Image 1 (spheres, each protein chain N blue to C red):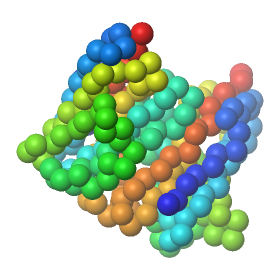
Image 2 (cartoon, rainbow over the protein chains, first blue to last red):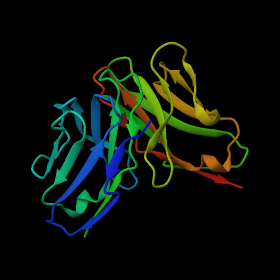
Image 3 (spheres, rainbow over the protein chains, first blue to last red):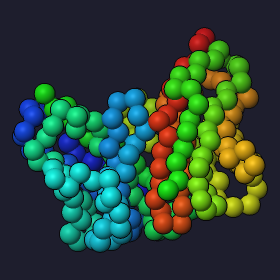
Length: 115
Length: 112
């Protein structure tokens, strides 16, 4: 079974530039998450999708971050314009059901460096 | 909202020694509790989980954790550390709304 795929693995940009990250979850997983993991900290939930609808985006900085999951499968997370404090690893995860008694499956992450 | 506190950002043990990583949670509803491990440059991988039933949960690689409601704790243990256990460990709590919150993590170092 293929895991959660993310790209790019690494990205370096200058502040005020834009960047986009892509995620393809495990086939059949209805729920998709984007987490931000700053160095030395635990992952912080940015946004949660159930199929193509947003379940929770309360911690997403909506003035600069946006995410979509148009067909209920893969997803894109965009940052525009980027700030220095956005330097982090962006983790995508998926799970089979919304009622989370199960397991989140994580991708390897996209490491963003903002100069 | 639920939250997790991991006591000790770094833990160092000798190979063969007991591993104890501490986790305390806060939740207004019966929690679902998880331990994830992250190896360098990799995503998080589930070690074990508690949902309902037996409070002592066994996971992969010889790890286990015990849910203690009275202490709001879910500490992770392994009787004998191996070099390959060196990684970052994250405790997480979730509720019925699938809202999973992670602790800050504990980096485990294993000395030969």
